Length: 226
Image (cartoon, rainbow, N blue to C red; front, side):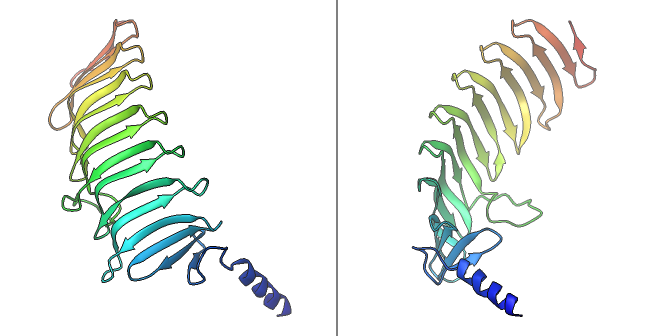
């Protein structure tokens, strides 16, 4: 009993809040963070005492409502920022590399949420509008569009030399129409054609010198020339 009592005292002492964290903040052992929630905001700290995130809450529902910002423990730079509406991401959100350059930006709409989730979650499903992803040097890596939580419309991806890697279109996450893929030197690597139900009609692949390699159709096995 004496040993358990001493262990309890030591444990409690180790779990005392680091400098800068209010004594009211509670330690979450599963996530290793400190959390302070009021009716109007939530503030979270890393166990090192550095700020993790700040968020506004709806005083009636307790759900995220308004601006949300998360921070890097390493240098305090912003990792992500955006707005919530009734716990759903809404408007333009940004994510950043540690150097401060934009990594990802995505448009959301709480009024245009995807409805076919098996498990209800307020963190995904409101992607609606343009999306862009970048390399650490600031060059564009990928761009496209979402509609009510689905990839919808044309998507393009680029190599770091800014040459096109692929382009094609989606309809509710499914590939439709013509898709083209390119080697880093700009030569066509392959092309595919899908119907409006995302069934493959034909696929052609090419060597890096531009010569045709194989052909695959919906009804036939792949035929390769070499």
